[in-house]
Image (spheres, rainbow, N blue to C red):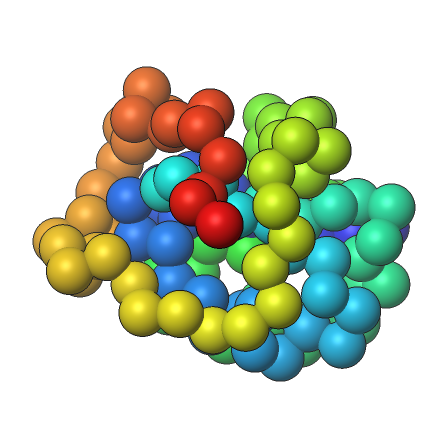
Length: 110
């Protein structure tokens, strides 16, 4: 089992979760983070740290459409191991529904 980053991370991209991850299994896209399912040790420390409540266990029904996406992009995007500032408009996007079309496949700038 692993944890999965879901839709509410899009355009919010808080990295509080990254700061507490003991195995550095987060990967960064231009406007979202993902978790590498083979690296996640299912410790759960990231879930309560997410200000956007965008992280759920892969057994949660909300994870269904995001599990494969996390695996796909974790293989393409750079690893992120330290907390960075969120986008300036993160709070405006937090909690908005229908953000899936806004997901950028572009990796985060190094």
